[in-house]
Length: 368
Ligand code: OSB
Ligand code: MG
Image (tube, rainbow, N blue to C red; front, side, top):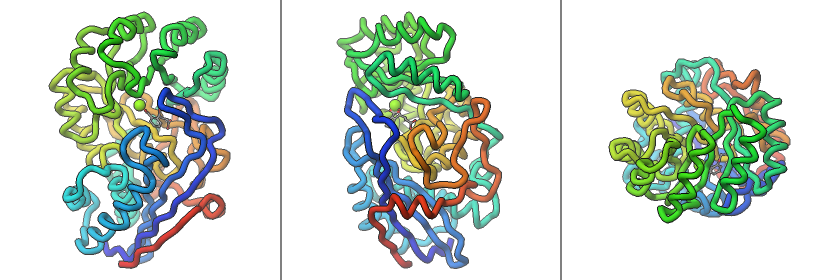
């Protein structure tokens, strides 16, 4: 792919509203924006989605920068590749650090698609022209949640996800169901429960939820299979699925009936597509997860969610769900409950240079 440089940018932006889970609050989002340039001056963009602290997975902005600077970028420099699908093989000599790998790998996909003057969706095998939009309500106040849900339904979102925990589950969901008897709702626990809470979780079957996401430990596959046998609500795994093999084992074992695919969590688009293809073959629905991301990662998600197996609205919302102004142009917008899959080359969005300059904290360029 004749790469001549890789540029790392660390950016920082406040969220419009704090994003609350039982694990803490995200008020300010740091992110890594990668720009890869080839010998013809074509550029590809990727985004590192690790958080500033290791609350969701073990990675952080700093561990990502360390992996990229000291291992991943030198590997790519010393081992030229001609297709982005070769990156995961190349990076396999480095254990885990999936978000750091995905940041670089997704930039390679954008570059490759642009070199071939095709949309990233087309390059990945996407078949959808629009992707259904879903949004997450992450607050510990029932009043705020009800107000936000009304607003999001006005904006056209097709599905609402709420964050739950043992401190915020039965009565919270009962209130929401009372106001919205037919709304497609899912609940994400981010590992707030253990098997000892089995009666609590069973009680949530009352609410006809689309699914319950990651009720048990972030690294568990076995106990989720025991839980799924006891509850009617389908289990969706998020944190537990870090690779194709995790997905295969979880499905074979009966640990879940749905999978949330996040590009960063699984190490890139190649692995994300492998998981999609496997689930599609097995008839397991998948949806695209979100990471409170900026526009670049949002664009990669839209391309991924255009694959045929993404049959459930994902956590793909408009740029203005979180940001006063995003770093891409045009911004991602929801129209009639959906987001159009871009048809232009690569991710199909340009960088908003003025906004990028405003939010940039640090920058380093590696010349090949
Ligand atoms: O568990 O799905 C999650 C955001 C950050 C970290 C973990 C999760 C989330 C979300 C998605 O719930 C939020 C979004 O980007 O829409
Ligand atoms: Mg989740």
